[in-house]
Amino acid sequence: MTRRPVSVEAVAGLFLRRQHLDRPLKLTFTKETLSRFVSDAGGLQLDSINVVERAHYLTVWSRFGPYEKAALDRLVYGERAFFEYWAHAACLVAAADLPGWRRAMADFHRRHTGWSGWLKANSRVLRRVEGEIAERGPLSSGAFLRPASLGKSGGWWDWKPAHHALHYLWLRGRLAVHSRKHFQKSYDLSERVLPPGEPLPRAGFPRWHLRKTLYALGAAAEADLPRYLTFPRFEPGARRRALAAMLKSGEAAELEVAGLPGRWFALASDLPELESPKPLTGTTLLGPFDSLLWHRARAKALFGFDYKIEVYTPAARRRYGYYTMPILHQGRLIGRLDPKNHRAEKRLEVRAIHFESKPDAAAIAGTARAVRSLAAFLKAENVTICPGPLRDALNAVPC
Image: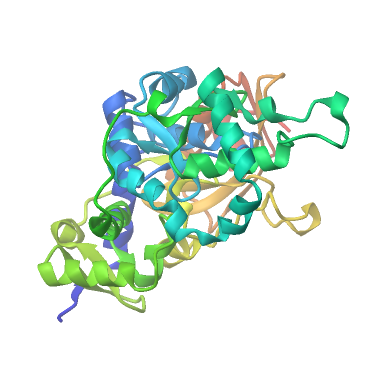
C-alpha cells in the first residue's frame, strides 16, 4: 500500500483546526458552535482543580474568548446539549454522540471485568443506591454518608461502597449526572436525564470510535489511537481490525509524515486539507487538561513542545510552575506561563513565564492580548506580573 507523503506542519495544522484552535479567542459562543467543537474534539474534559478556573470552562475560553459560564451550565444541565461520560477522562460529550456512548455503557460490564469481585461483595449496596435515587430523585454522594450517630458500625450506606456504586451505575448508563453544585455531582436515573434512544450496534462500535478519534486528531500515528479517546478498553485486535476495514474500504488512508517514524493514518476525506494546509492565526493560552494536550508525546512530536502537568509534582521539583498554561501563537506552542486567580482580590497573577526561544514583538503582543482576555473572562480587574517584556506590553502591576 502506497503511503501518502505529508508534512509535520500540515498534520499539526489540521489537528489545530479540528480542535477549533485555528483562530482562537475569536469564535462566537452559541449552542451550535460549542456543540460542533465538543463533537469534533470528542469530549470536553472535566477536572476539579480550580487554581485558575475549572478545566472545561478554560478549554471553552481558549477558543471562544470571554463568555458567561452560566450559559455553558444551562446548555449542559438545562438544555441537555451535552452529557457527562468517560471519554478520555470524565468529559462533557455532545448529545449527538449519545448513541455511540450508549454502546460503551451497555457493554461496560463485558469489557471491564475488574469490577466483578466488587460487584459480588456489594450487590446489595448497588441495589439500594439505585433504589434510593429512583424513589427520592437526584442525589449526590453526600446523601450516602454514614450518619455520625452510627459511628464506625454504619450500615449499607458507608460512603466508599456507595461512592463506587454511583460511579459504576454511571458508567453502566443506569444513572446519569443530573446537575452539579459547587462542582459536586448529583445523579438521577438515566431515563429521567437522557433522551430515549438505542445504542449503536455492537459490531459497528470500534469503527465509530476509531472514526471519532481520527477526525479529532486529523492524522494519527498508530500510538495515538488508543491514547486520545482512552475509554473504553477494546479487546486485543478490535481497533486493528476496524482500521484494516477502513483502509480496505478506502475510508481511511495510510500516510508518511516527513521526519516522524511509524505508520500514520487519516480519513480519506481529510487528505485534501493535509495536502493544502491553511494558515493559522491568533494567540491563546491552553489549560493543562485541554484536548490538544491529552497525548503528551503527540504534542512533542508535532509541536516540539515537551509538556507536563506539574500540579502533582512536589514544589521543589517543579520546573515551570504549579498550573502552567501553554501559549499557542500562530499554530506553534511557543512557551508557557503559570497563572493564579485571586478571586477575592479580583486579581490575576502571572507568577512565571517561560518562552521556548526569544519571542518576537508579535508573540509578546499576542500573549499580552490572551492574558487580558483571560483576566476579562475571570472578571479580574488587575493583572500582576514580574518584570519583563510581557509586563511592559500589559502595562500590568508589578508583582
